[in-house]
Length: 526
Image (tube, rainbow, N blue to C red; front, top):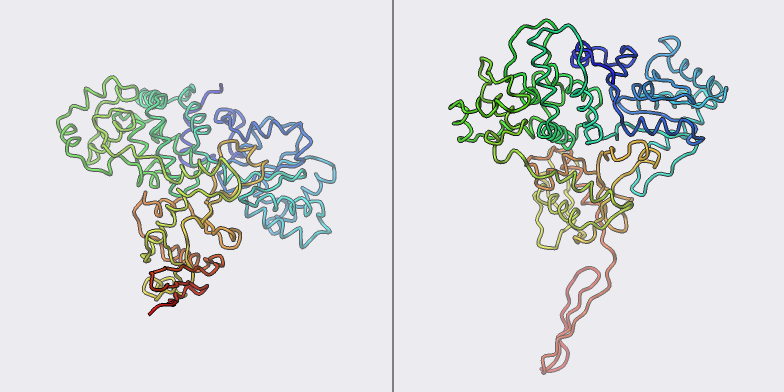
């Protein structure tokens, strides 16, 4: 295992050298971790299909890093396809010409390219097909592989497109490998003895199951809030957990603020993910008098003394954050006497729903999920309903900011069993590449019999609100979306219903027509 340079970790934390082209080859090996994507790329290197592979997604997703660090020998790797090729005035022309050259030579391609650049390149070659006809054919096929469908998308033997925006970077598969890498590595560099003590304490902490569970809980909170964590953001966070941003020559004595727990919830320094998961999982959000008494009494020092990753740091810094530092360090490192009772919350409702839906393909009759969402929609919109009866209300308004005060009419009803739930899936090649580490961006809710016409996209944050796990007011745009979805409801045609009540002196006939009108007719007798 390659050693990790302390200076490299500082660069990763500070955002320097995060592009693969800026990282030395020896350092790439030091931060490379095993992932399902790397295994997939190495497995298909000697296969005939798919012939070409595109890695796409957002900046920082690790496309180029995966292409460079995978042991590939049978494919031509193009890992800067999001940058300029040729002149700055016409970068797409240079990239199209390069890819056309490789395709003309019969090369197999492994291309790492941002999603936006891929779309722009397709538009360019469609307008200039004579310049790059093979590239145009390849990108047209690749675009079809970016679709998501409830029934899945058929794989293409010509090209596989792996969208790393679907890569669940906070899955156990990835986070455990990343934490193993930094916790067990030999960290080299001419750092001061004080910084060495803090670094070793951080590595000891990262080996604890309680600490790892706390980190994974925080990252899952960011995921269910709708945030896609890139590999770059993960490395920024983990590099900070190890270094705390301490300079190589820093001589400040280490203290409890250098613990993994304190660093994990330091929103000012721990990177862009910390403010997101801090709002949902910071143990200091809840005030608890019994914990405050223990903090003021100083009993934490004795409890922390034998805890790995805390014992060598059992002094407090000067400042107003002392109490928060104690509680965060205790919670993350498993010292339960200082943990608020409600800190460890039930599993996320969206994550549970994904686990149920992932077992089958197609539109599913999952009443527990659909009923919860239907009740949540009516509750969020403040619409009248009764037990088992949900009028398909339509607001007479097209202004999202005024819709709450607009009048409503209903021309149809929704029954709880009328709804179906679907999980949008990528092609099988993408699922093979990401393994269990893939995460759908939303789930779909539709009406039985017309699921493809008016599906409602429900994001993780909206799911949390509708299921009651998170109390918050929906944005006007979300309210408008839910209102329009309800207005699209249709009920199946019903036959006339009739009942006859015999009274002995005659009969009362009750009929319900297709228009829901009730008619009464007396037959015989006085």
